Length: 514
Image (cartoon, rainbow, N blue to C red):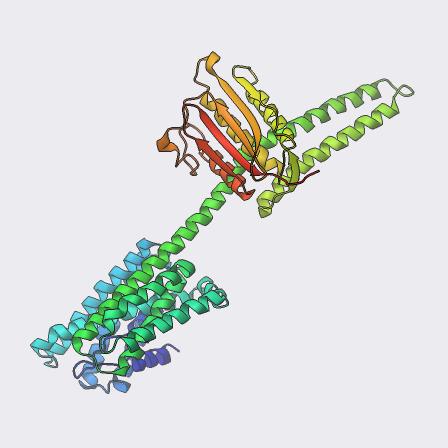
C-alpha cells in the first residue's frame, strides 16, 4: 500500500521539473515517507529507500544511471528517516499537533530537515557534475521549497487520517451543509485565482485566505488542514493550464508555504480555544458543586431539623406506654416526617439532575418566597447580629419561572459577598439590604446593597470573570457561576459602580400569571 501510494503521489506531482534530474516544485511523497516512519518506526527506512529508488526509475527514468539513483535514494531515505526520528522525539509519540508548541516543532524540524536534505541531494548532483554552479542555488531552492511545502501540507492530513478521533471528526463534518458550502467556496475561489488572474495567479492569491479563515474558525485544525490540501491540489491543477517561469513558481511556492503555516496555526489555536472553553465548563461545574454546598446545607438543614424534632415527638408519644399512645397525633407527626423527607429528596434530586445533565427544574416562584429565602440566608450569615440586615417588601404580584435552587444560590452568593464587603467596617456602619421591584417588560429586579467601599471602575469589567477574586481564600467562581445561572434563565447580574457596593439581579417575570 505504501509503495503504491508513494508512486502515485510522485507521478501526479511530476510537474515543472528542473534540470535533468527533474526537481519538481511540489513534492508530497516525502510527507508520506516521514509520516509512515513516524507511525510505524524508523525500521521502515529500508523499504522507504527501495520505494524512492523504484520511483526514480519508473517516474524519472534514472537520468544519472542506476548506481547514482541508488546513492541519491539512500541520501533521501536517510534524510527523511532523520526528520521522522526528530519528530517522534520532539512530539513524544503524540502526532495530533494539538498545540502551538507542537506545531512550531513540526514546522521547524520540517523546514530545517528539508533544507539539509536539499543541500545533501543537490550537493550530490554537483559533485557528480550533474548540476553546474549557476544552477546549484536554483535547484536547492526548488528542492527545499518543494519538499517543505509538500510535508507541511500533506503530513498533517495524513496524521489526521491516521487518528481515529480525527477521522470521526471529519466524517461528522462532511455531513453538515455548512462544510459542503465552505469547501465549495474554497474550490470556487481557487478556480477564480487561476482562471481569472490570467498569467499571474500570485497577485490574487491573498483571496484564498478569506475562506480559509471561515473554515478554520468553524472546523478547527481538521478543517484548516483539509483546506490547505484543497488549495495545494488546486495549484497543481491550475498551473497545468499554461507555462510559468521559475520566478512565478518560487513565488507560488512561498505563498503556499505561508498559506499552510497560517492554516496550521489558525486551526490549532481554534481547537485550543475550544478545549479551554470545555475545560472551563468542567471547572465551572465542579466549582458550582462547591458553591452549591452552602445552599444545599441551608436547604437540607431545615427538613433535617424538622425530622429530628418530629422523631423526638414520636419517641415521647411511644414513651407513654401501651394504651396511652395518641395514635392520631403520632400519625400526623409521621406524615410530617414523610413530607420533610420528600422535601429533602427533592432538593437533592434537583442537584443530581443538574450535575448529570445540566437540566433545570423550572417552576413558578413568587418574588415574596425569594425574599423569604433571602431573609433566612441573611439570618444564617448574621447569627451574631453584627450587621444591620433588612429585606424590603416584594414587588406586587411578582412571579418568575425559574429553578428555585439555582436562583436561591445566586441570591446566597450575592448576600454572602455583601456580608464579606462590610466585615471590616465599624459595627455601626455595617448594613446590607435586599429589595425587589417590577421593571418594564415583565422583568423583576432584585437589588443587594451593602455599605461597603463599592466596586472600583477598574475591577468592574473583571469582577465576573472566573478565578477573579481579591479574597485570601476561595476560587473566585461564585460571581461567575451566578452570572451563568442568571443568563441561563434569560436574566442578568450586574455590579454597579459607586460609593456603595450594589449588585442587580434581573430576571424575566411571568406574564398574566394566576
